Length: 332
Image (cartoon, rainbow, N blue to C red; front, side):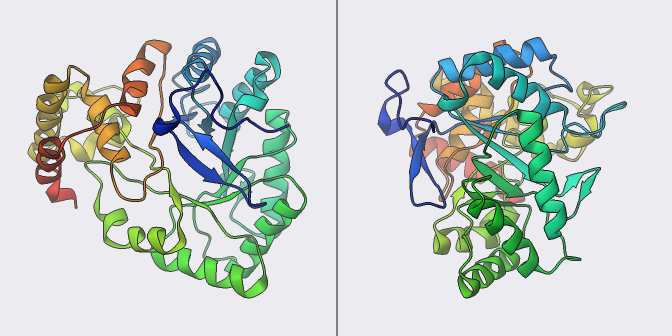
């Protein structure tokens, strides 16, 4: 049994987007994806479960994680996020109300994208989640050491085996995305349907300068990660001193500049006009961009979730968008 499309207790269908599967079917999504990178890292298991419950209760559908989360944390080995998500799926009774996405190539035990690695990593993810399918499976980072023909065939084999329902690409250049499609079409393989790029108000160039063209050409659903720039676009950092000693200090260091703080000031101004938070505005800006199906955002604790969910129904006007486009132009 698969998740129902546009469940009756979800937001209006006008506030939803679509994910296509390899078999030609599709599912409606809330245009906000819940990121699972905090689970088992900055979120306790209890907080993670509460966030998941609140997200689904609010009509949320797609949950995004990766097999390597959170291998970077001291004492962690990778898979922590998937394990917590799997426990929640097993005890909540909500597996058939959600879609789950994960990624392969960076787990310490499953590095790269050789056929054997992709197959073994997928089985590991399925085991940790305690489920029979991965709804959306991403090639997390390109692996130049493995022929793309081998990787594309490995993902297609997982589709044919019923282990994954859709293929996604993350952190690939536009040329490599196009090459994957050429190989897949030439060999009768399943085509990718989703792209997960690094994209936000202070990181625009990579997506807008090249990836957007292939997105439009191949009708890819775009799910940007780092949508809030590791928390920078929430407005929590107002000076370099604010980032000292925090978990994500290294991730936000490059934004602690006059240009970066100018973007935050512009978010503040738009947020005040609408009576919402800067995070809500930053996500709504992303949601309005060409090709974007839904931004990915994480909530460490349940109280952070309402500001993220509010972005689903915030429609920025021309004045808002122009102001944000202009102030973020140094990053375009």
